[in-house]
Image 1: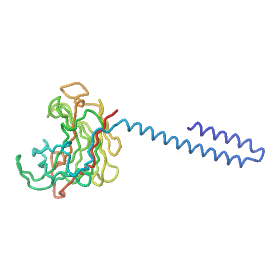
Image 2: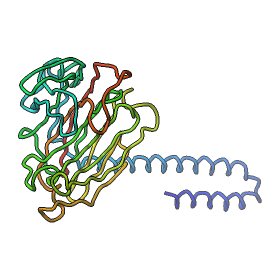
Image 3: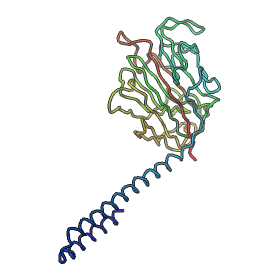
Length: 304
């Protein structure tokens, strides 16, 4: 493209010099300027179209194979299972996870996971908060792919939502020898930061982790919806927020198998909203309840 532009400007200079002798300089200069601008515009348009085609080609490498846009009146139980427990996720969390409509439901085309401050008792005891945790285990399990979730996050001290993945069959042993992929974790008192992490190594307490955070350039994650994604391929996992690639992980291990284990087995998706725990700390007098995690859609893509 640039060679063509240079050619026409050289042609203009040459003809301007020749036309000075016969009094036609101004008219020819106007003509060449018109031609030069025309071809410059054509080449710029061609360049933009070419870039668009290249991006389209790159994007079509990922083919949608599973999704939920939450357009039905109720949660699709052929795709999602509620986990019901009060054991605190191993992190001293304070909530009782239930399958009640109070804690998870469909509203305006979104899955809503709602944390409520209330005394609730069931088979595992009594807790001061309730919430929900849903997973795709044995209904949606994938080895590699692009996982993409559009979500609006809650806020407040002690609020801990997560979009993450666990191994379906734990073929290399218990947590975290078989791995964990955190697509997005978030602490409600740091409303402009999300974390992307992998856990691996040995079983607890010989586990390790790697990851970094992403700082939202403007505003908070509780203000509006954002797209959180990973692209998981053999030997590499990449993290994205709103299309911005902010980290890549390629180094990990498990005690029980060679690399690229443990991230070479089937994983499933988990969506949950925890209250309290070792990492965020517990809610305080500033925390407002109820808090809601909104999920607009979950898409899974396969690379073709």
